[in-house]
Image 1 (cartoon, helix red, strand yellow):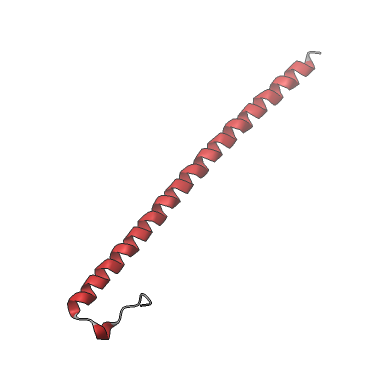
Image 2 (cartoon, helix red, strand yellow):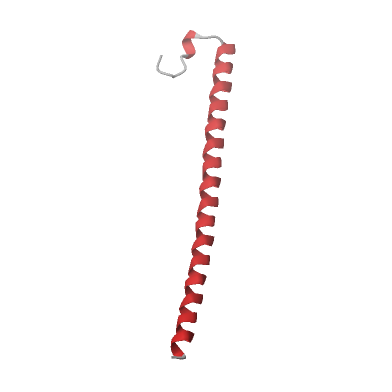
Length: 72
């Protein structure tokens, strides 16, 4: 069996069962994809915040070194 629905070899109930199973699988796949998309988005936001924090620390250190260097 290649996974395709053979309409000629089944009755109406089997067709309905097949369609329900197919829809259930489709929704499960969509749910997994949405979950992964949300997870990736959160990771990106976290990395952006981390980058902004490191950038501000770098700027503060740069300003501190500049002030310290001016006094010498």
